[in-house]
Amino acid sequence: MEFVLALLVPILLLGGAFFGLIVWLARRSGRDIGSTIRRFFQQGILLTLVILVATGVTGLLSVADPDVAAGPGYLAFMLSCVIVGGLALMLAAYRERRRAARGEETGFSGGGYLVLAELISLVTAATGLSIWVGSLLEGRFDIAPASVALVWGAVWVLHHRMAGRAGRLANSVLVGSLIGLVSTAVFGVHFLARVFEWGYDAVAGAVVLIRDIGTLLEALIGLVVGGAIWLRYWWVLGQRGERTTLWRAYVLLAGVVGGLFTALSGVWYLAYLTLDWWFGSPTGLAGPHFRELPVALALAIVGWMVWRYHHDIMRSDGTETRTEVHRAHNYTVAGVGLIATVGGTAAVIAATVQALTPATVLYPSDRSEIVAAVTVLLAGAPLWWRHWTGIQRIRSAHPSSEVASPTRRIYLIALFGLGGVVALVSLLVLVYLALEQILGPGAGTATVLAIRWPLALVTTVGLTAAYHRMVRRTDLLEMPDPEIDRQASPEQVRSVTLVARDSRHVAEALGEQTAVRVRYLERTDGHGRGLALEDVMEILDDRPEPHLLIVSGQDGVGIIPHDG
Image (tube, rainbow, N blue to C red):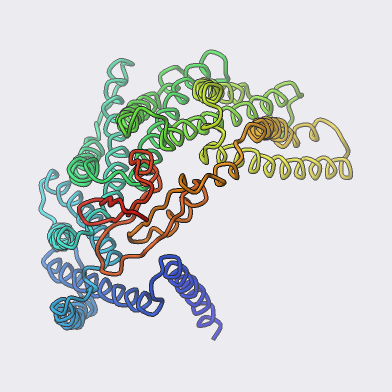
């Protein structure tokens, strides 16, 4: 009974959370809650049936593989998946076909079903293909991974074409691009690291009796497969698609920030290995000490390539005027540099306190910690200084537009808000550790060493939060009064009617940030796409008409001026 309750409670909690999320999304988009829940379960059942049938067919084909232990239970399960799942899927397909003939939206054309089915089959097929090609290069033919690649590859092709015909391909393009980008970057780092290791061994004169080429081939296979996914989803589809908010978020977060973080990690590791050898406490000879140098070089090169490519895309996006997309890019990069700077400064303070304090058994003296902290600081501080000073120069040149930017407001509030919380928690830990030492064995060297990290965090994070609070207060003094813009003369008041899907939040944000009267109508015919706030604001800036009807269709956005 206890086992049943322990299993039932998480299921009920997850089910309730999903149900609440569906209801919230339905209310937010203005759709009928009952039909939304019905579509959710309908698409969930279809997805489950497809997975069951594909799993069963894959398992039956894998019976011919001598490495697969296909006993009676295995065969019974796979046959059950094919028979029951196949019949149920055929019945569901027949019903969906009749609904499509009546002009109704079917479950097979649902966005959630198509996205999940396409991406699940993509990852599964890519994994099976990689394992199968690896076995071929080793001189054998493994039937099981070949079956996975064949069956799930067919499922992916089917749903990829279905998504294209239903106009839902854009829903999975960015996720597929992310899968391809991450796979390419990860296996690219592994491949370059192995190649550089061979070169390092040759330069260092290391004697390698047996060279493991298997890891190099695995990395190369993963690089090719991940690159193919990225080329299909991003190079062919993604970069030519509509530049929505999600599109820009992918380029900014996955490409610019992800590549920058990877490159900084490699640069930091390179600097650490070098400085630690000269100023730290290295153990052993130079050859073993610099053994991780190829990994650091691979991280720096791959991260730089990812960052550079997506950085150029960000710079080519939109007009020369400064938009929220450009601000998001600048503030995000500045934030990455600031986090590294604050973390490095805190580590320098903590390591310096430990170095100046007599060593103990629990806290031995180690100069390598100071070297690691200094390298983090050297990697992050120039990046933050360059972007933050550039932002502040733009703010001085155009104060009204910059201080009113929601991106700048979110950046400053997040820094002094979260920074204040971290500083407060660090102060609490600092007082607790100090009192624990004083009330216990007494104050001494152990007390100083115990509180060094909370002390460093209170100092650095507290000063950072205070600085950005001061910047925010200065911005508030120069903030233009929104009421002045809203009290425009009647002939200057504009109106816009948005007709789109899942864009009610865009209409609400547009009404809050501008003096435009906004009306929103949700499309219920299954056509059209979501609107991006930046795109709507650009339309309002480009079009002089006082009253506009903006309709989102399958082929783009239609703009119709009217007399109000």
